[in-house]
Length: 278
Image 1 (cartoon, rainbow, N blue to C red):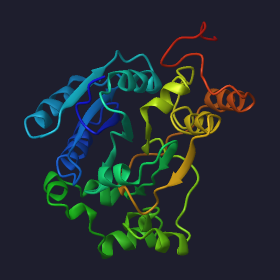
Image 2 (image 1 turned 120 degrees about the horizontal axis):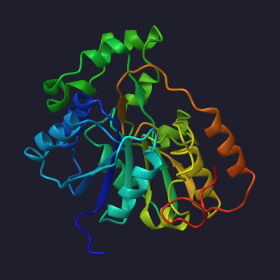
Image 3 (image 1 turned 90 degrees about the vertical axis):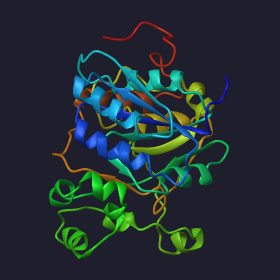
Image 4 (image 1 turned 90 degrees about the horizontal axis):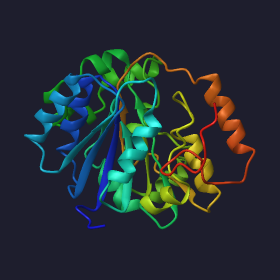
């Protein structure tokens, strides 16, 4: 495989074109520039395609748009297509409603290690904070500055984990402040491409969000010795407000089944190893 860049940024998308515009605008101001962006689109309307055309006219990095027909939640299928399409050895995953800070990709690249899964966090912005976002606030970097209104939203419980928006470059300081985390967020993690192939990628038998695109991946990677590494207060990311998404009961049952086995490879992933269960 000929490498086109150092890493691939895979962005999982379903509609929300104007939020995606902000995300892609944030990508154009990354301090780390040697990357490709792959839009893993789970059946969005044509408005998303228009935003990608707009972004391509402004971006210095290649943007690949993958799309599949909307037949319900099939994010994992789309993510596997993105893995197969990627042209680098290192993959960073975000969601299309999560805006990366300027040093987001730099931190993922700089902190990468052999057989490590990098575990980033995100600021859960308030509805007020999210609705105040504009293209100018993104391109100027103003959205990354925590002012009194953002702090007030956090104190009032309208925003969550505002403190995760503070970038602390010193590893000792992060340890002293107990800033380590052990769990994965599907909207902010990175890993070597070969490790995802070793577990056969994302399990396409999940039919809803919340486990299959993150906890399942972390569990199966742990079975092949890939350990998590905390990126809290690095790789800063801001999640645009929306009503809370519920984990489906079928997904919970699927994950319990996966946890009861010792096989790191899912049956329905990058390769189809057996007939999918009903």
